[in-house]
Amino acid sequence: MRMEPSKTEQGKPCHDKAQALLCTIICLVVVVAGFVVAEIVFRMHNGIPLRWDIPGLYQDDPVLGWRVRPGYKAMRQSKDCAGQPVTIDMHTAAMGFRDFGDLTASRKLLVVGDSFTLNRDVSDGQTYAAVLGNLLGCAVFAVGGGGYGSLQEALLLEESLPRIEPDAILVQLHINDVINNDYELEKQSVINNNYHARPYLSEDGSIVMATPAYHWTQTVLDGLGRLFGNHSQVILAIQHNLQMALLARFADNSIEHRIEKEPDMPAYLRSLETTKRVFERICSTANGIPVYAFILGGGRISRDLADTLDGTCVTMIRNIDVALSTDPPGQPSLFAEDCAHLSAYGNARLAAELKTGLVSGPEGAFLPRALPSNPDRRAR
Image (cartoon, rainbow, N blue to C red):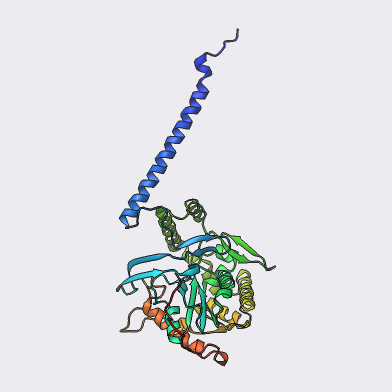
């Protein structure tokens, strides 16, 4: 005779499911509460206001991958590479520009670049673009983003050129441009990898957005940062520390070292060709406006990049990296706290070198002229 299950036994599966659901909810609450406490403690320890809506320097962008946020303000204490203390008071201007001059000026210079042009390590007026504007007597419009590659700079140029209508264009390059212009190369780089979605120029001329993560943890943290709108200081700190840890562990395996030894690497040659096509796009956008460029960083990649651009409309200002390679004795340090980016003194030295290159350009394409009035006016 078959025994029927009791009412108690019949209700047990539902009871187990309810317990499991309750445990899951409790665990989630504990995790969220722990994260909130960690965020509060981290912000209090680092003097960061307890406001979720404080905008960061960057914001996600469907075209550029990321762009500098306009109206960003930051004041902090820092030091240069030699350990001398400095106070940094920086702002971003209209359209996310670091320097935004007078649109009615008689002479205007548009500068695009990466973190060296964004210049987070110096105060307003101390960027090489701002100093260069004073030396040339022209209005300067400078925009850049940390980790930007050539295509991002070309896209920035395309969107800003109609409004600014400059008399000359100056493109700041770094050896990272060659790496960042090829998805496969960037995936193999830990030195020049932003592990964030960026645009790449395909062989057919189309633009593809992709994320070149070197390590799976970078993809996870990038996703978490997007989930929280990049407002969580804890996640941002973890991302930074992870990048530093990966750099310390895998830097010797980064693709840049192989390129120095194997210059005929197919992916590297492909990236140089892509870089040339990006600059042909820049030349087309410029439509006759003189285009100058200079490269920061030395080695084979820098030399190959300069040789590649010789076949375009670009006038190269050469040997900038040589002029900034060592700190002169008895002078302030050329470099900022990270000993890689430039200090205020380094920016001033760079501006002086660039002035010589611009003034001696073909047919005096950018000779110094005085502004009609108010050269320091900034659009905020």
